[in-house]
Image (cartoon, rainbow, N blue to C red; front, side, top):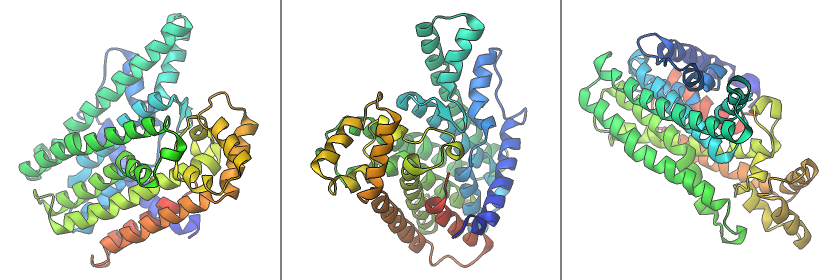
Length: 364
Protein backbone atom coordinates (compact mmCIF):
# COMPACT_ATOMS: atom_id res chain seq x y z
CA UNK A 1 0.00 0.00 0.00
CA UNK A 2 1.21 3.53 -0.76
CA UNK A 3 1.03 6.53 1.54
CA UNK A 4 -2.00 7.79 -0.40
CA UNK A 5 -3.84 4.55 0.48
CA UNK A 6 -3.79 5.65 4.10
CA UNK A 7 -5.27 9.12 3.52
CA UNK A 8 -8.72 8.19 4.84
CA UNK A 9 -7.17 6.58 7.91
CA UNK A 10 -4.91 9.54 8.64
CA UNK A 11 -7.79 11.98 8.20
CA UNK A 12 -9.86 9.91 10.65
CA UNK A 13 -6.97 9.81 13.14
CA UNK A 14 -6.43 13.57 12.80
CA UNK A 15 -10.12 14.26 13.45
CA UNK A 16 -9.98 12.19 16.67
CA UNK A 17 -6.73 13.85 17.68
CA UNK A 18 -8.38 17.28 17.45
CA UNK A 19 -11.28 16.13 19.62
CA UNK A 20 -8.97 14.55 22.18
CA UNK A 21 -6.78 17.65 22.45
CA UNK A 22 -9.82 19.89 22.81
CA UNK A 23 -11.06 17.64 25.60
CA UNK A 24 -7.71 17.38 27.42
CA UNK A 25 -6.94 21.08 27.19
CA UNK A 26 -10.41 22.21 28.30
CA UNK A 27 -10.14 24.22 31.50
CA UNK A 28 -12.18 21.70 33.50
CA UNK A 29 -9.99 18.79 32.39
CA UNK A 30 -6.50 20.26 32.16
CA UNK A 31 -3.87 20.96 34.79
CA UNK A 32 -1.93 24.12 35.56
CA UNK A 33 0.72 24.95 38.12
CA UNK A 34 1.94 28.22 39.54
CA UNK A 35 5.42 27.05 38.51
CA UNK A 36 5.63 27.81 34.79
CA UNK A 37 8.43 25.33 34.09
CA UNK A 38 6.30 22.45 35.36
CA UNK A 39 3.29 23.54 33.28
CA UNK A 40 5.47 23.85 30.17
CA UNK A 41 7.04 20.43 30.80
CA UNK A 42 3.72 18.64 31.29
CA UNK A 43 2.29 20.07 28.05
CA UNK A 44 5.52 19.94 26.00
CA UNK A 45 5.07 16.71 24.02
CA UNK A 46 1.29 17.09 23.91
CA UNK A 47 1.60 20.41 22.10
CA UNK A 48 4.40 19.13 19.85
CA UNK A 49 1.93 16.83 18.13
CA UNK A 50 2.56 13.15 17.57
CA UNK A 51 0.45 10.58 15.76
CA UNK A 52 -2.21 9.97 18.47
CA UNK A 53 -2.67 6.46 17.08
CA UNK A 54 -3.39 4.79 20.42
CA UNK A 55 -6.33 7.00 21.40
CA UNK A 56 -7.72 6.92 17.85
CA UNK A 57 -7.60 3.11 17.89
CA UNK A 58 -9.47 3.14 21.21
CA UNK A 59 -12.23 5.22 19.64
CA UNK A 60 -12.32 3.04 16.50
CA UNK A 61 -12.67 -0.06 18.72
CA UNK A 62 -15.58 1.58 20.51
CA UNK A 63 -17.31 2.28 17.20
CA UNK A 64 -16.52 -1.22 15.92
CA UNK A 65 -18.85 -2.79 18.50
CA UNK A 66 -21.60 -0.22 17.91
CA UNK A 67 -20.68 2.16 20.71
CA UNK A 68 -20.79 5.95 20.83
CA UNK A 69 -17.23 7.28 20.40
CA UNK A 70 -18.05 10.34 22.50
CA UNK A 71 -18.38 8.16 25.61
CA UNK A 72 -14.84 6.90 25.01
CA UNK A 73 -13.31 10.39 24.81
CA UNK A 74 -12.01 10.48 28.41
CA UNK A 75 -10.45 7.01 28.02
CA UNK A 76 -8.84 8.00 24.72
CA UNK A 77 -7.40 11.10 26.40
CA UNK A 78 -6.17 8.90 29.23
CA UNK A 79 -4.26 6.67 26.80
CA UNK A 80 -2.68 9.68 25.10
CA UNK A 81 -1.54 11.11 28.44
CA UNK A 82 -0.37 7.76 29.73
CA UNK A 83 1.67 7.16 26.58
CA UNK A 84 3.15 10.66 26.87
CA UNK A 85 4.24 10.02 30.45
CA UNK A 86 6.07 6.87 29.33
CA UNK A 87 7.84 8.83 26.57
CA UNK A 88 9.09 11.50 28.99
CA UNK A 89 10.57 8.86 31.28
CA UNK A 90 11.80 6.69 28.39
CA UNK A 91 13.75 9.65 26.99
CA UNK A 92 15.54 10.00 30.33
CA UNK A 93 16.40 6.31 30.38
CA UNK A 94 17.65 6.35 26.77
CA UNK A 95 19.36 9.74 27.22
CA UNK A 96 17.69 11.01 24.05
CA UNK A 97 17.72 14.72 23.29
CA UNK A 98 15.04 14.94 20.58
CA UNK A 99 11.42 13.84 20.49
CA UNK A 100 8.86 14.82 17.85
CA UNK A 101 11.38 17.26 16.44
CA UNK A 102 11.69 19.22 19.72
CA UNK A 103 14.12 18.87 22.64
CA UNK A 104 13.21 16.14 25.11
CA UNK A 105 11.86 17.45 28.40
CA UNK A 106 14.99 16.73 30.44
CA UNK A 107 17.25 18.25 27.76
CA UNK A 108 15.03 21.32 27.30
CA UNK A 109 14.85 22.16 30.99
CA UNK A 110 18.56 21.60 31.51
CA UNK A 111 19.06 24.23 28.81
CA UNK A 112 16.46 26.55 30.33
CA UNK A 113 17.99 26.15 33.78
CA UNK A 114 21.32 27.42 32.44
CA UNK A 115 19.77 30.23 30.43
CA UNK A 116 17.01 31.39 32.77
CA UNK A 117 18.33 30.42 36.21
CA UNK A 118 22.09 30.69 35.68
CA UNK A 119 22.80 27.14 36.86
CA UNK A 120 26.13 25.47 36.12
CA UNK A 121 26.19 22.45 33.79
CA UNK A 122 25.87 19.75 36.47
CA UNK A 123 23.13 21.53 38.42
CA UNK A 124 21.23 22.32 35.23
CA UNK A 125 21.40 18.68 34.08
CA UNK A 126 20.03 17.50 37.43
CA UNK A 127 17.28 20.13 37.27
CA UNK A 128 16.28 18.95 33.79
CA UNK A 129 16.03 15.34 34.98
CA UNK A 130 14.02 16.34 38.04
CA UNK A 131 11.52 18.40 36.04
CA UNK A 132 11.09 15.58 33.50
CA UNK A 133 10.49 12.94 36.18
CA UNK A 134 7.95 15.15 37.93
CA UNK A 135 6.23 16.07 34.67
CA UNK A 136 5.83 12.39 33.79
CA UNK A 137 4.47 11.68 37.26
CA UNK A 138 1.87 14.42 36.81
CA UNK A 139 0.86 13.14 33.39
CA UNK A 140 0.24 9.71 34.88
CA UNK A 141 -1.93 11.21 37.63
CA UNK A 142 -3.79 13.34 35.10
CA UNK A 143 -4.43 10.22 33.00
CA UNK A 144 -5.96 8.40 35.98
CA UNK A 145 -8.20 11.35 36.78
CA UNK A 146 -9.58 11.55 33.25
CA UNK A 147 -10.37 7.84 33.14
CA UNK A 148 -12.85 8.25 36.01
CA UNK A 149 -14.88 10.59 33.79
CA UNK A 150 -16.15 7.79 31.56
CA UNK A 151 -18.49 7.16 34.51
CA UNK A 152 -18.92 10.55 36.18
CA UNK A 153 -19.32 12.49 32.93
CA UNK A 154 -20.59 9.95 30.40
CA UNK A 155 -22.41 7.40 32.52
CA UNK A 156 -20.37 4.32 31.60
CA UNK A 157 -20.89 1.46 34.09
CA UNK A 158 -18.98 2.26 37.31
CA UNK A 159 -17.62 -1.27 37.65
CA UNK A 160 -16.27 -1.07 34.12
CA UNK A 161 -14.55 2.23 34.93
CA UNK A 162 -12.93 0.70 38.02
CA UNK A 163 -11.87 -2.41 36.09
CA UNK A 164 -10.21 -0.29 33.39
CA UNK A 165 -8.41 1.84 35.98
CA UNK A 166 -7.15 -1.29 37.71
CA UNK A 167 -6.14 -2.90 34.41
CA UNK A 168 -4.17 0.14 33.20
CA UNK A 169 -2.47 1.12 36.42
CA UNK A 170 -1.62 -2.38 37.66
CA UNK A 171 -1.47 -5.01 34.92
CA UNK A 172 -0.49 -2.81 31.97
CA UNK A 173 1.87 -0.64 33.99
CA UNK A 174 3.63 -3.64 35.53
CA UNK A 175 4.14 -5.22 32.10
CA UNK A 176 5.27 -1.96 30.52
CA UNK A 177 7.79 -1.26 33.27
CA UNK A 178 9.06 -4.82 33.04
CA UNK A 179 9.49 -4.35 29.29
CA UNK A 180 11.43 -1.13 29.82
CA UNK A 181 13.63 -2.84 32.40
CA UNK A 182 14.25 -5.72 30.00
CA UNK A 183 15.23 -3.24 27.29
CA UNK A 184 17.81 -1.62 29.57
CA UNK A 185 19.17 -4.97 30.78
CA UNK A 186 19.39 -6.46 27.30
CA UNK A 187 21.49 -3.51 26.13
CA UNK A 188 24.25 -4.73 28.45
CA UNK A 189 23.78 -8.44 27.80
CA UNK A 190 26.28 -10.35 25.60
CA UNK A 191 24.78 -10.58 22.12
CA UNK A 192 25.30 -14.37 21.97
CA UNK A 193 23.11 -14.74 25.08
CA UNK A 194 20.15 -12.73 23.78
CA UNK A 195 17.23 -14.82 22.47
CA UNK A 196 14.87 -13.52 19.82
CA UNK A 197 11.86 -14.70 21.84
CA UNK A 198 12.99 -12.52 24.77
CA UNK A 199 13.33 -9.47 22.49
CA UNK A 200 9.84 -10.03 21.05
CA UNK A 201 8.45 -10.38 24.59
CA UNK A 202 10.14 -7.10 25.50
CA UNK A 203 8.63 -5.36 22.45
CA UNK A 204 5.15 -6.56 23.37
CA UNK A 205 5.52 -5.37 26.95
CA UNK A 206 7.00 -2.00 25.97
CA UNK A 207 4.53 -1.19 23.20
CA UNK A 208 2.04 -3.94 22.40
CA UNK A 209 0.44 -4.01 25.83
CA UNK A 210 -0.73 -0.37 25.73
CA UNK A 211 -2.20 -0.87 22.25
CA UNK A 212 -3.88 -3.99 23.61
CA UNK A 213 -5.38 -1.87 26.39
CA UNK A 214 -6.61 0.70 23.86
CA UNK A 215 -8.52 -2.00 21.99
CA UNK A 216 -9.82 -3.54 25.23
CA UNK A 217 -10.96 -0.23 26.69
CA UNK A 218 -12.62 0.98 23.50
CA UNK A 219 -14.53 -2.26 22.97
CA UNK A 220 -15.56 -2.52 26.63
CA UNK A 221 -16.85 1.07 26.67
CA UNK A 222 -18.68 0.54 23.38
CA UNK A 223 -20.40 -2.54 24.80
CA UNK A 224 -20.66 -1.05 28.33
CA UNK A 225 -19.36 -4.45 29.43
CA UNK A 226 -17.54 -4.65 32.77
CA UNK A 227 -16.19 -8.15 32.06
CA UNK A 228 -12.92 -7.47 30.25
CA UNK A 229 -12.66 -11.16 29.35
CA UNK A 230 -15.75 -10.98 27.16
CA UNK A 231 -14.88 -12.87 23.91
CA UNK A 232 -15.60 -9.84 21.69
CA UNK A 233 -13.38 -7.63 23.83
CA UNK A 234 -10.61 -10.23 23.90
CA UNK A 235 -10.63 -10.62 20.12
CA UNK A 236 -10.28 -6.87 19.56
CA UNK A 237 -7.63 -6.42 22.23
CA UNK A 238 -5.65 -9.34 20.80
CA UNK A 239 -5.80 -7.65 17.39
CA UNK A 240 -4.60 -4.26 18.69
CA UNK A 241 -1.90 -5.84 20.89
CA UNK A 242 -0.34 -7.80 18.03
CA UNK A 243 -0.49 -4.73 15.78
CA UNK A 244 1.20 -2.73 18.53
CA UNK A 245 4.05 -5.23 18.67
CA UNK A 246 4.41 -5.02 14.88
CA UNK A 247 4.45 -1.22 15.25
CA UNK A 248 7.46 -1.44 17.57
CA UNK A 249 9.25 -3.75 15.14
CA UNK A 250 8.72 -1.16 12.40
CA UNK A 251 9.79 1.61 14.79
CA UNK A 252 13.11 -0.18 15.34
CA UNK A 253 13.54 -0.53 11.58
CA UNK A 254 12.90 3.18 11.04
CA UNK A 255 15.34 3.97 13.85
CA UNK A 256 18.02 2.48 11.60
CA UNK A 257 16.96 3.37 8.04
CA UNK A 258 14.37 6.13 8.48
CA UNK A 259 14.49 9.82 7.60
CA UNK A 260 15.67 11.81 10.60
CA UNK A 261 13.67 14.92 9.72
CA UNK A 262 10.48 12.87 9.49
CA UNK A 263 11.18 10.77 12.58
CA UNK A 264 11.94 13.79 14.75
CA UNK A 265 14.84 11.96 16.43
CA UNK A 266 18.35 10.88 15.41
CA UNK A 267 18.67 7.84 13.13
CA UNK A 268 21.16 5.33 14.52
CA UNK A 269 20.64 6.26 18.17
CA UNK A 270 19.54 2.66 18.92
CA UNK A 271 22.96 1.48 17.74
CA UNK A 272 24.81 3.92 20.00
CA UNK A 273 22.53 2.91 22.89
CA UNK A 274 23.33 -0.77 22.31
CA UNK A 275 19.75 -1.88 21.70
CA UNK A 276 19.44 -5.62 21.11
CA UNK A 277 16.92 -5.36 18.29
CA UNK A 278 15.53 -8.03 16.01
CA UNK A 279 17.52 -6.31 13.26
CA UNK A 280 20.82 -6.90 15.06
CA UNK A 281 19.98 -10.50 15.95
CA UNK A 282 18.71 -11.26 12.46
CA UNK A 283 21.90 -10.08 10.76
CA UNK A 284 24.57 -11.21 13.22
CA UNK A 285 24.62 -14.88 12.21
CA UNK A 286 25.25 -13.89 8.60
CA UNK A 287 28.26 -11.71 9.39
CA UNK A 288 31.91 -12.56 8.93
CA UNK A 289 34.19 -12.43 11.97
CA UNK A 290 35.56 -8.97 11.04
CA UNK A 291 32.01 -7.69 10.55
CA UNK A 292 30.96 -9.05 13.94
CA UNK A 293 33.94 -7.34 15.55
CA UNK A 294 32.88 -4.04 13.99
CA UNK A 295 29.31 -4.53 15.20
CA UNK A 296 30.46 -5.31 18.74
CA UNK A 297 32.81 -2.33 18.74
CA UNK A 298 30.14 0.15 17.64
CA UNK A 299 27.00 -1.26 19.29
CA UNK A 300 26.52 0.52 22.61
CA UNK A 301 29.44 2.88 21.99
CA UNK A 302 28.21 6.43 22.57
CA UNK A 303 31.47 7.75 21.16
CA UNK A 304 31.11 5.88 17.85
CA UNK A 305 31.57 8.17 14.86
CA UNK A 306 28.81 8.82 12.37
CA UNK A 307 30.77 6.92 9.73
CA UNK A 308 31.07 3.88 12.01
CA UNK A 309 27.34 3.94 12.73
CA UNK A 310 26.60 4.21 8.99
CA UNK A 311 28.93 1.29 8.30
CA UNK A 312 27.02 -0.85 10.81
CA UNK A 313 23.70 0.25 9.29
CA UNK A 314 25.01 -0.91 5.92
CA UNK A 315 25.86 -4.30 7.43
CA UNK A 316 22.42 -4.64 8.99
CA UNK A 317 20.91 -4.11 5.55
CA UNK A 318 23.31 -6.40 3.67
CA UNK A 319 23.21 -9.27 6.15
CA UNK A 320 19.42 -9.55 6.25
CA UNK A 321 18.58 -7.91 9.58
CA UNK A 322 16.14 -5.40 8.12
CA UNK A 323 14.39 -8.05 6.01
CA UNK A 324 14.16 -10.36 9.03
CA UNK A 325 12.48 -7.72 11.19
CA UNK A 326 10.11 -6.78 8.35
CA UNK A 327 9.15 -10.43 7.91
CA UNK A 328 8.35 -10.78 11.60
CA UNK A 329 6.27 -7.60 11.62
CA UNK A 330 4.22 -8.90 8.66
CA UNK A 331 3.72 -12.19 10.49
CA UNK A 332 2.32 -10.35 13.52
CA UNK A 333 0.06 -8.32 11.26
CA UNK A 334 -1.36 -11.46 9.63
CA UNK A 335 -1.99 -13.06 13.03
CA UNK A 336 -3.68 -9.87 14.21
CA UNK A 337 -6.04 -9.69 11.25
CA UNK A 338 -7.32 -13.22 11.97
CA UNK A 339 -8.43 -12.07 15.44
CA UNK A 340 -11.18 -9.89 13.97
CA UNK A 341 -12.01 -11.94 10.86
CA UNK A 342 -15.48 -12.75 12.24
CA UNK A 343 -16.33 -9.10 13.02
CA UNK A 344 -18.94 -7.84 10.52
CA UNK A 345 -17.74 -5.42 7.84
CA UNK A 346 -18.15 -1.74 8.73
CA UNK A 347 -16.49 1.65 8.39
CA UNK A 348 -14.69 1.02 11.68
CA UNK A 349 -13.41 -2.40 10.65
CA UNK A 350 -12.04 -0.85 7.45
CA UNK A 351 -10.30 1.86 9.50
CA UNK A 352 -8.77 -0.68 11.88
CA UNK A 353 -7.56 -2.94 9.08
CA UNK A 354 -6.05 0.08 7.32
CA UNK A 355 -4.41 1.08 10.62
CA UNK A 356 -2.97 -2.43 10.96
CA UNK A 357 -1.27 -2.17 7.56
CA UNK A 358 -0.12 1.37 8.31
CA UNK A 359 1.68 0.11 11.42
CA UNK A 360 4.20 -1.84 9.35
CA UNK A 361 4.32 0.29 6.22
CA UNK A 362 4.65 3.79 7.69
CA UNK A 363 7.87 5.68 7.08
CA UNK A 364 7.87 7.81 10.26
